Length: 110
Image 1 (tube, rainbow, N blue to C red):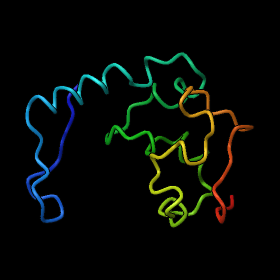
Image 2 (image 1 turned 120 degrees about the vertical axis):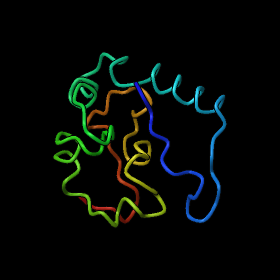
Image 3 (image 1 turned 90 degrees about the vertical axis):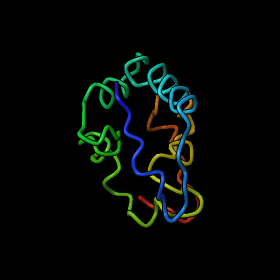
Image 4 (image 1 turned 90 degrees about the horizontal axis):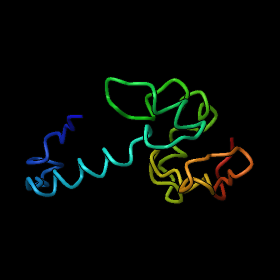
């Protein structure tokens, strides 16, 4: 699996370049913890589908499940971004993502 680190030499005017050892450590972590290493329903729904961007947030399943959340809500300080699963999914660390374990931060409505 090749990981694209983008244009980090000019990341919003800063040099955020990574050395080879750091790139190797990140790549190893992502390889060892990708969705295919989990045997959960959500891993099968999201992790088994390739997207050109390799982002789970670009899969049709993820978009369908989050279609009632406004783009501005993901930028709310209580969430921060689409990839902060722990902000709403109380069981994100288990990889289960049961609907009964969703608690939206104050001010966020679906």
